[in-house]
Amino acid sequence: MNFPKELKYAKSDEWVKVEGEIATIGISDYAQSQLGDIVYFEFTVEPGEEVTAGQALGSVDSAKATAEVNIPVSGTVLEINEDIADEVEVLNQDPYGKGWLAKIKISDPAELAELMDAEAYEAYCESR
Image (cartoon, rainbow, N blue to C red; front, side):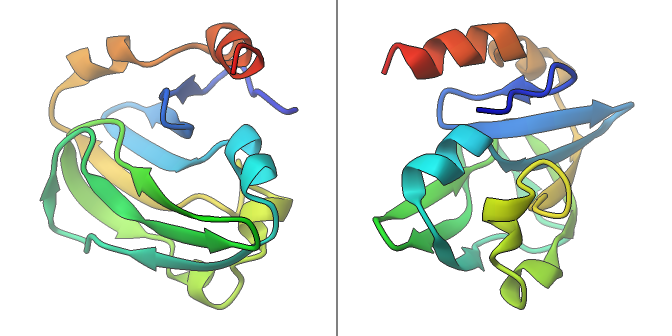
């Protein structure tokens, strides 16, 4: 499993890369490995939308299951990765790079304290 140290992780298996007040969000390597081959992703938010932590970002369909992907931090959606519709396989191949899902301008930086660092997330995944 791959757990990049510079990222924060939610118990619902999303990762967050924080750069200033911008959070880039995706699904973790652990999540994509549990789902198997991802065949479809549908966004439930749009750029410009105000979102809250825990709200659905979209849903992912795989060979094994359909799962909701949540937003780990509140803010304003700046961008969604529209390339995912045409290249959904990048969620399996490069979940921390080209497989990013959305960029959000963080409205409450204190919410970041609720997320796990890589070491804590790895331990959490191993405990399941």
